Length: 357
Image 1 (cartoon, helix red, strand yellow):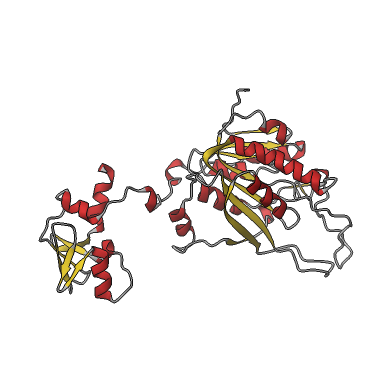
Image 2 (cartoon, rainbow, N blue to C red):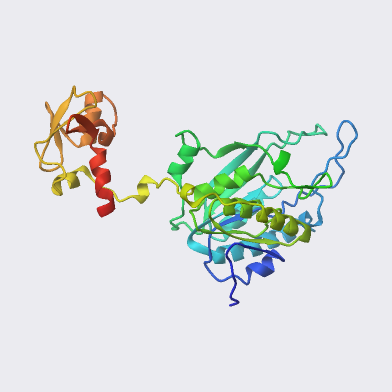
């Protein structure tokens, strides 16, 4: 096997040939934006008779669906080989190719986690008026197999979305304005992806210092965002003009300071500490009174970690839910203990144990 430097590097070469050189299980995350095989046959003309600069590049043209399927199978096979066992892959496409790609992803043994709709806030209009305006692209997110313990930074994504879960429909603009690369007034790349899209993907499914691959780098968006977010990038691009543009773009990209790159850890990644452990370890003693936030309700802790309030007994969660008349309640935040002259959530006692457990 050829020894390669895969760290913070982009190369100008054929994707399939270069992928074959990479050692097994090298990457934590792969983002792939392959040719869509758009099958455009006619020129697109605006109402003012000006020409629309659609995707008519040779790299997006294939002789047949079979040829495209073979191409897709080959590069995805290599990606599966070089993806770490707990890694994941994102593939983006349109209605022209994504269903064929999705079928091949499943045939190769990847495990699909989500399909995500990128709903474009500002899509290109439909100038012919013969069908609905194409206003979205589809992303498939898959782990290497169904047993992979893939990265998903759930808490960070909630923070990104004002403490609400992010759904699988993403409303993001297409790449335009100052972000769009141009030479002499013309687009450098016909399908340049916006940095906001890659920011969300990398934030969701990778961590600082993870190794990220883009086998169809294009104008370099994946590498640029990876560099900013402290990920290690490796990109492959066949077209020399795109490669040069990506290189120039990377040189002008500044990394976010390391102190600002930490993300919130998921609760499931933290060791589970039942309330009874606090009793066993002597952090809180049997007979101690605990209260609601306003100190209108008080319960006593039993030796087995259960609590008693009037005629109710059970876990901190069960008793709190019964008091509130609710189906469930987080007892860690409902119950408080006396600390000096103030009340503090019992969750603070749990958090104090995490570094030692």
